[in-house]
Length: 271
Ligand code: 1HE
Image (cartoon, rainbow, N blue to C red):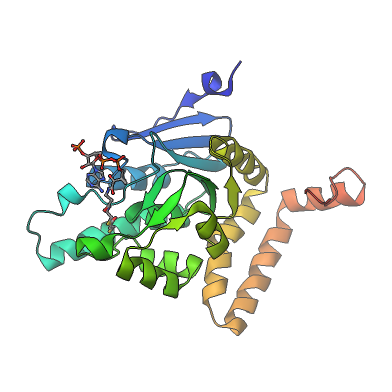
């Protein structure tokens, strides 16, 4: 039976612009507004927040994709074209921050498969996820500069950390786009694959992440980024405490025993 036919719905109420299914412990969330190139309107951003805060406990990893020819055209510009006072605009940006924090610091690793345009808020969304796989059709842009607006979905923090603030400046000041290959070399993605291979690659990576212990995945999602941002002394202390908690889990004890009793896989060269 093909994998799609075994997918089951997930019982979370979402806007029409988002579709969610699950296959075992892996959820597949699709941006499903291809007629507007998956532009992110308020309903979609709030739907993302709902999905990631209500993710059922049996979901161990999430794959995020976009339907149609592009991953996402970013912020729905029709929603910001009208007059909005500065406070409303700031609160709107904070709403995006809340939704994307729910992704970055949620309960499950999120692997995104990118293709076509990954633009503005679409790139901010991808940057809030944990692993990015780009098909060769992917390109990146930050047209906020050209539209007379600014990043508002966490890009100044997350995209700048991924690809460097100098590249973000160039993209915003000049409208430069990066190809899939340029983005990969700059650190935007961990994997670069041929067109049509993004979803299966992301699914395979999700299966690997889902097979880790829940404690290790918690440590990687919640402790590692905080340690990375902290001063070295605090980071080392947090690391030691997180390591102690992880080692105490029953699952870790079993896995270590499996290795010592020659039942676990060795770490072998993959390519
Ligand atoms: C949109 C949007 C959008 C498309 N908001 N409606 N983002 C941008 O500046 C990117 C703007 N979009 C584009 O440059 C192009 O649409 C694409 C290169 C992504 C795709 O081109 P194409 O030729 O396939 O599609 P299209 O004909 O341009 O668009 C199809 C429809 O989607 C059309 O609507 P229609 O009613 O005429 O059919 C477009 O108007 C609509 N559409 N993109 C609204 N973005 C938290 S701050 C984040 C700040 C940002 O993200 S700024 C970046 C905004």
